Length: 359
Image 1 (cartoon, rainbow, N blue to C red):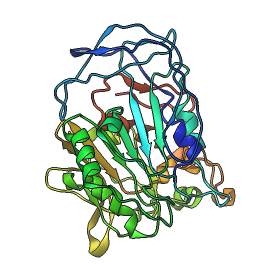
Image 2: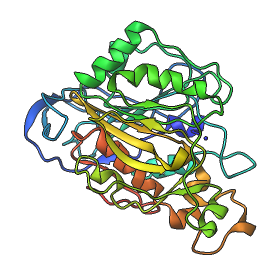
Image 3: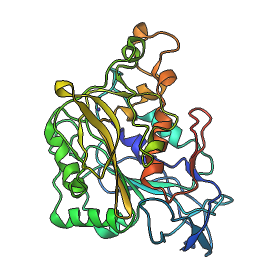
């Protein structure tokens, strides 16, 4: 159940854009220099990575695709010499990192950070809000994608955050009318109250978390015994709306998460065995107005042990069955980010260590 503060602060600095397929909507480039760096802190936002200067120019982006409409107009910052034909993907990570994982000495998401930071010419920017920060329309307008981590003062014990009516309305408007994309994670705490903040923000969509605890099955003990996590490998492959969410993904680690309610107009992507022989939804997506909501029932995909095998009990491992050899965690993250923001038509991640299939 995790996100480490340092890793979160550099989230997506390594994401870059290639050449865009263009169709409509002029996007203006901001003038003047901007600087950024990586840091972690308590409270406020921490900006990451973009330096350089740019003039004013017109940029067009593709706004076609299911669940999108209108235009996407925003400031674009470019690094010197970088390909600036695409708008910047702006991301906010809201919430605390988790505390659990396969490494008994303390799991981190350092590997996640390094993968995301692997591009030398990244044109993405991420901010982290690790303490309770008001969700205003002005704040939300800065971002294309928001990742909801543990919405609590302490990811394990709380207290869990409560949002005002105005904040919930602003968040809903950002999704429905501004084309925002949300990825929500859960499973940070054994206390079912951890689900309340995310349900408060996303309840309008009908996609909500339950307070139960669910496990993926162990498909092969050589895999889950080494990784410390069971194997999520049951994907819906018949629904064209969410088909790409499992593209290139055979299995990922899933350990003690929560099930998700899916209304009839939502799309179930993955399930695990639930109570009384029924299936429990653990990955559900929904197109909501001009935006998208994606809820995932766990957070083990953030841990370094699941990316590199660092900290796993090697005595329990067989060569060829380490988590980095059996899980496609990088591809899964790419698929989720790409799905919730389909207007980022040229979004890609450049990485030799953890390559992904670009679609």
